[in-house]
Image (cartoon, rainbow, N blue to C red; front, side, top):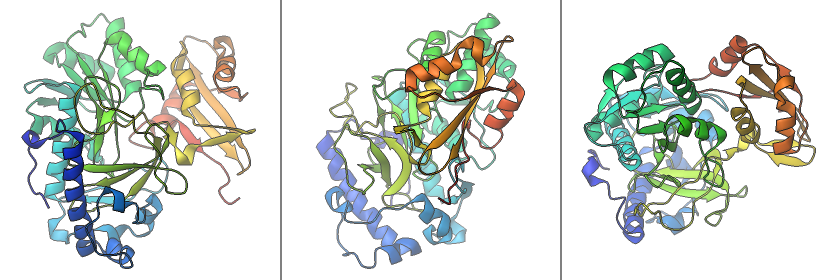
Length: 431
């Protein structure tokens, strides 16, 4: 297994055939390592042939679920305690948080991963990068963003989860060219800077984390359009998770997220676990390569997306992952219509006067009952803003819209996770 990662080794611009050959070699090494070092996979693969697995043969092996991680957490650890360098937890957005361990090599791999993403987004060595996310509270992504800046050769400004005024002061004083942050927060920051007449022209790139900024057609969401209104051409979407320790970052072409060539094998699977053709949506399933502490094979993320067909204009030979369309666990069924919460959220993000919002879902397995809770600014109400009508126009579903105050909405959205949580699943799981 590789122990040192250097940004100069990124081979993402190699031809797709060469990248495929490299991934097959690393995949075979990865499966051998899992058999030898991981108690979970030693038992899981015992009845499968011990051979060189390539991308085609990989689909003969079983997938790994989040439930597997929750029920057999310790069995995934592939190193002794003396080699564990960091312990974190999954965010727990859709289930029970699980421990994820990293060796020193894994942390170096993580820094390399994010450095490749920064390069894809167009950052330059010597740039300054404002980090508006936490690095504490066992949040591995915050650490990865920071270490990636260092490995890339840029300067990190770790202002973290701070006030708008504090970030404005940093921007005015240090003039960073790049910001890493959650889109909904960056939109508030852009509005704050505009309202206070603070020059924000130094910002050339926004690395957007935790929330989608593009639609199924690769167009900007209403939230993404808000950001582009403040910083034209700056939005770069990303996708990652604590378990797969690999990110998919948009390049300069901004039409899909690239993983580093040597860090991940990606499959898109249907409900039955079969691969779907490029362009068709399914569950993102990732085998992270060159991981030593907690290696995974065919990990089903629970996120729905698709592989974008064809070559990227940027010249990279790596695949492109489309925007996350939703999470399997959050799929809604309402009076014969199936959709994801994002359909509602995109409408709310585009309505002037909507200050904060979240969704509560109740009901049985047959049909879901949705309540949308909205906090409005300037003394407005959901009725005066036409929220219910706008939601129906987009989804063709009538849903109750309830007014809530901004402070209680913020506590609900930001009080249960490191990321904004706008979907609260109160459905009866016993049915």
